[in-house]
Image 1 (spheres, rainbow, N blue to C red):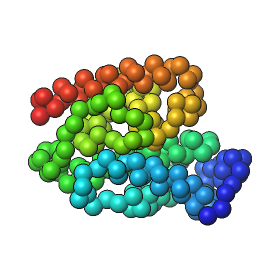
Image 2 (cartoon, rainbow, N blue to C red):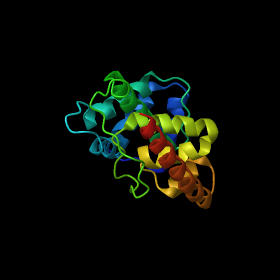
Image 3 (cartoon, rainbow, N blue to C red):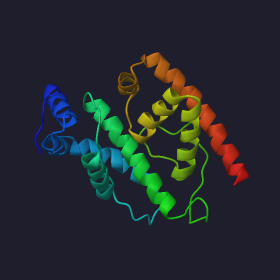
Length: 193
């Protein structure tokens, strides 16, 4: 796998945005290690015995990217943020297809724990988190995006600020407020389930 300078990554993203599929084919191998790390973070928190593997998650994200139209990524960080969103959607789709929310399906439930370190995995109830994030997005899209980028994407505060075009301090404030809201919402939903 080769390496590209940041400017070359941006050029490939612009070419892909203009409709050149070969640009994505050249870009993914360069960022493959980042994508595998991101997928591995997701998979580390999944219940044992889950049939989704890290490589499958990366490949599925690639397929969804390849089939996407009108994708806008400005640089490496924006591309990784998009991939984090895709991986979240893939895992939620998989969990929903297994019926883990409505029929029990062996879903594991845990509370949204404020001590979770960024990039150290996700709650085992990915559907519950997705539902809560969807509700938060209806109330405050930016805060939901901050959680998505940091948990699902493993992006740093600085990278999250860059993607959202806000200050580092605003990311930290949104992070604290959104985590508290999600913890409350997930706890409330678990009490009703």
